[in-house]
Image (cartoon, rainbow, N blue to C red; front, side, top):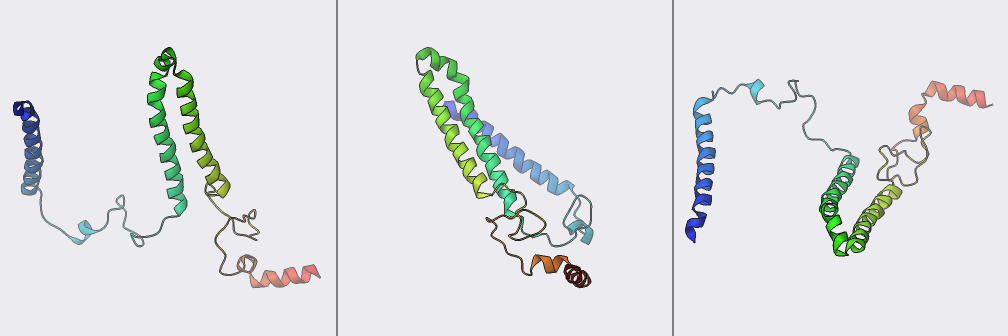
Length: 164
């Protein structure tokens, strides 16, 4: 019985030996001359600009999560589609179809919820912003009034005179 696992154990030992041997061989061959330019953060050959740690807009993560959810949906539906003809022949075709439609319906309900909530809007406008359509779902408020931030002082005087 244990002899059946001998090939697996031998394969495991060869794999571990290959990894350890490669690391030791690399350590012996590579040069070890660190200098300041070599220790800098690598950004495609360009000198780094600004800090390496900054916050991403959460919308990147929301879109990525929605993509992953629908990608996993395809992974779950593919096996059903692969054996659907056999299930129809066995008389379970309607059950499988209803099951898949229910699964897709639940995911579509989630997509409609996210869409209605406004989380798929790439740029949310601020309430009262003259540059875009009002969005009542916006959770951010400007620190200064938008109009006074956009219009220079000289133009405000001209606008006030023109209105009279």
